[in-house]
Length: 121
Image (cartoon, rainbow, N blue to C red):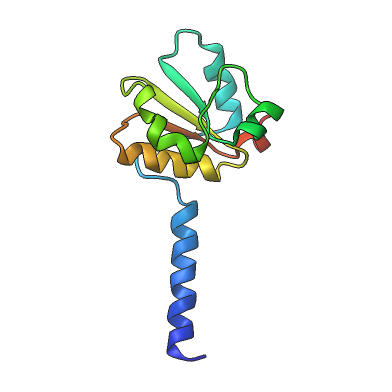
């Protein structure tokens, strides 16, 4: 292999690692922890499902509001910055990306549900 191939492979690995690492300052919850949080009616939280509208209509958790990932930045104005934002998607990848978007937008309390709907039973 020549040097360019090695550099290319290294950059691809870094990109993949960067995409799957949790966002800095974001709490990571399991589906089991989420079930306990949903029972707390006094929770100062807003629950957001970042899957597509079709995915959300097919199956969703009661109490979650659907804001597809591609609309999150524009719709973030409708979210309270004082309340914690709990994010879920199908596997945890899109909600991880959503958590990075919200943190960059100034949200301080953000939680990602690891494993997403796939871990929910």
